Length: 151
Image 1 (cartoon, rainbow, N blue to C red):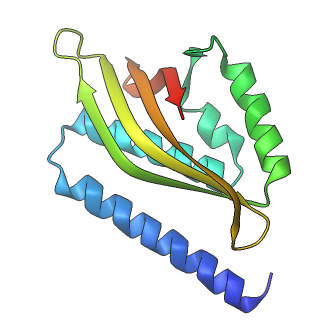
Image 2: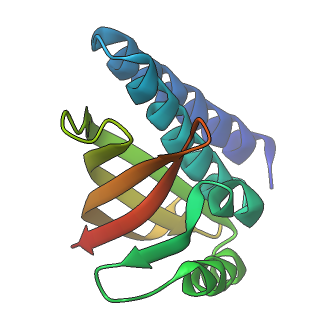
């Protein structure tokens, strides 16, 4: 990787981190919503750094998607994408989390997410997804138990 592409990559990551921190600080949120936001950041960081353990640590043991895919599927699909793309970038353009008032140990998140994969600094593929997640609080940790992805 040459210096120009390294600089560009670092610039994009810095801008992304700045944008997310501004968006998160602009909203007044509860401590639980902040913990969920940190978990979302861990998922993002895990995908971008190809650290599946970071992502898997945020998923509950009974995690499932709207297509009935489980935590094992998540591990396999990450391995496939990590192998296929040298660099992965995740940009969360909108994220809203709400704690369930009747069941305060449950929460829902809706987000718009742009995912790109690239060999160098120019994305080779990219897609925008509408993501819905359901969280549950287990021993003071918020874990993602359900995820629905629409493109």
